[in-house]
Length: 130
Image 1 (spheres, rainbow, N blue to C red):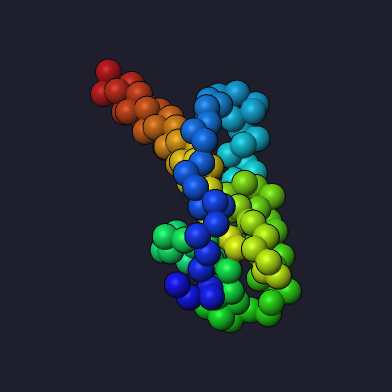
Image 2: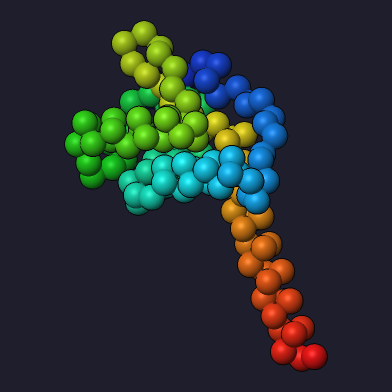
Protein backbone atom coordinates (compact mmCIF):
# COMPACT_ATOMS: atom_id res chain seq x y z
CA UNK A 1 0.00 0.00 0.00
CA UNK A 2 1.25 3.50 -0.82
CA UNK A 3 2.40 5.90 1.87
CA UNK A 4 -0.51 8.09 0.82
CA UNK A 5 -3.16 5.65 2.01
CA UNK A 6 -4.05 4.15 5.34
CA UNK A 7 -6.23 1.30 6.50
CA UNK A 8 -7.21 3.42 9.48
CA UNK A 9 -10.69 3.26 10.92
CA UNK A 10 -11.45 6.78 9.75
CA UNK A 11 -12.96 5.26 6.62
CA UNK A 12 -15.17 2.85 8.52
CA UNK A 13 -18.82 3.19 7.53
CA UNK A 14 -20.43 6.05 9.40
CA UNK A 15 -23.25 5.58 11.81
CA UNK A 16 -26.56 6.13 10.08
CA UNK A 17 -27.98 9.38 11.38
CA UNK A 18 -31.53 10.63 11.36
CA UNK A 19 -31.79 13.57 8.99
CA UNK A 20 -33.97 16.35 10.37
CA UNK A 21 -36.73 17.45 8.01
CA UNK A 22 -35.90 20.50 5.96
CA UNK A 23 -39.10 22.09 7.24
CA UNK A 24 -37.52 22.35 10.71
CA UNK A 25 -35.01 24.95 11.87
CA UNK A 26 -32.55 22.15 12.58
CA UNK A 27 -32.92 20.83 9.02
CA UNK A 28 -32.50 24.30 7.52
CA UNK A 29 -29.40 24.93 9.64
CA UNK A 30 -27.96 21.54 8.75
CA UNK A 31 -28.39 22.14 5.03
CA UNK A 32 -26.84 25.61 5.35
CA UNK A 33 -23.76 24.23 7.17
CA UNK A 34 -23.25 21.46 4.64
CA UNK A 35 -23.85 23.72 1.63
CA UNK A 36 -21.46 26.34 3.00
CA UNK A 37 -18.78 23.67 3.37
CA UNK A 38 -19.10 22.98 -0.36
CA UNK A 39 -19.21 26.68 -1.20
CA UNK A 40 -15.71 26.72 -2.74
CA UNK A 41 -14.59 24.79 -5.82
CA UNK A 42 -11.45 23.58 -4.02
CA UNK A 43 -13.55 21.93 -1.31
CA UNK A 44 -15.74 20.26 -3.93
CA UNK A 45 -12.58 18.99 -5.60
CA UNK A 46 -11.17 17.72 -2.28
CA UNK A 47 -14.42 15.88 -1.58
CA UNK A 48 -14.34 14.32 -5.06
CA UNK A 49 -10.71 13.25 -4.58
CA UNK A 50 -11.54 11.60 -1.28
CA UNK A 51 -14.61 9.87 -2.69
CA UNK A 52 -12.53 8.43 -5.54
CA UNK A 53 -10.35 6.57 -3.01
CA UNK A 54 -11.37 3.50 -1.06
CA UNK A 55 -9.03 4.34 1.79
CA UNK A 56 -8.04 7.28 3.91
CA UNK A 57 -5.88 9.72 1.99
CA UNK A 58 -2.86 10.96 3.87
CA UNK A 59 -0.45 12.80 1.67
CA UNK A 60 -1.64 13.23 -1.84
CA UNK A 61 -4.34 15.89 -1.57
CA UNK A 62 -1.89 18.79 -1.83
CA UNK A 63 -0.20 17.23 -4.85
CA UNK A 64 -3.57 17.01 -6.62
CA UNK A 65 -4.47 20.69 -6.19
CA UNK A 66 -2.83 23.87 -7.45
CA UNK A 67 -2.94 25.30 -3.92
CA UNK A 68 -0.46 25.83 -1.12
CA UNK A 69 -0.36 23.35 1.77
CA UNK A 70 -1.77 25.95 4.17
CA UNK A 71 -4.70 26.67 1.84
CA UNK A 72 -5.52 22.98 1.45
CA UNK A 73 -5.32 22.57 5.23
CA UNK A 74 -7.80 25.41 5.71
CA UNK A 75 -10.21 23.87 3.21
CA UNK A 76 -9.88 20.49 4.95
CA UNK A 77 -10.61 22.15 8.29
CA UNK A 78 -13.84 23.61 6.92
CA UNK A 79 -14.86 20.21 5.53
CA UNK A 80 -14.02 18.55 8.85
CA UNK A 81 -15.94 21.16 10.84
CA UNK A 82 -19.02 20.44 8.72
CA UNK A 83 -18.62 16.73 9.33
CA UNK A 84 -18.37 15.89 5.62
CA UNK A 85 -14.74 14.82 6.08
CA UNK A 86 -13.16 12.89 8.91
CA UNK A 87 -9.51 13.09 9.81
CA UNK A 88 -7.47 10.72 11.90
CA UNK A 89 -3.92 11.16 13.12
CA UNK A 90 -1.71 8.40 11.76
CA UNK A 91 1.76 9.01 13.18
CA UNK A 92 3.09 12.33 11.91
CA UNK A 93 0.30 12.80 9.39
CA UNK A 94 -3.47 13.15 9.26
CA UNK A 95 -5.45 10.83 7.03
CA UNK A 96 -8.75 12.02 5.58
CA UNK A 97 -11.86 10.36 4.23
CA UNK A 98 -15.47 11.28 3.52
CA UNK A 99 -18.09 10.63 6.16
CA UNK A 100 -20.61 9.01 3.86
CA UNK A 101 -23.44 9.29 6.38
CA UNK A 102 -23.02 13.09 6.41
CA UNK A 103 -22.84 13.11 2.63
CA UNK A 104 -26.05 11.07 2.63
CA UNK A 105 -27.65 13.63 4.94
CA UNK A 106 -26.67 16.38 2.50
CA UNK A 107 -28.21 14.40 -0.36
CA UNK A 108 -31.41 13.84 1.59
CA UNK A 109 -31.77 17.51 2.49
CA UNK A 110 -31.05 18.68 -1.06
CA UNK A 111 -33.44 16.03 -2.35
CA UNK A 112 -36.14 17.31 0.00
CA UNK A 113 -35.50 20.85 -1.25
CA UNK A 114 -35.78 19.71 -4.86
CA UNK A 115 -38.92 17.70 -4.10
CA UNK A 116 -40.51 20.79 -2.51
CA UNK A 117 -39.62 22.80 -5.60
CA UNK A 118 -41.07 20.16 -7.91
CA UNK A 119 -44.21 19.80 -5.79
CA UNK A 120 -44.76 23.55 -5.90
CA UNK A 121 -44.23 23.71 -9.67
CA UNK A 122 -46.73 20.88 -10.19
CA UNK A 123 -49.22 22.57 -7.87
CA UNK A 124 -48.85 25.91 -9.69
CA UNK A 125 -49.27 24.29 -13.10
CA UNK A 126 -52.41 22.53 -11.86
CA UNK A 127 -53.82 25.89 -10.73
CA UNK A 128 -53.10 27.41 -14.15
CA UNK A 129 -54.89 24.52 -15.86
CA UNK A 130 -57.96 24.84 -13.60
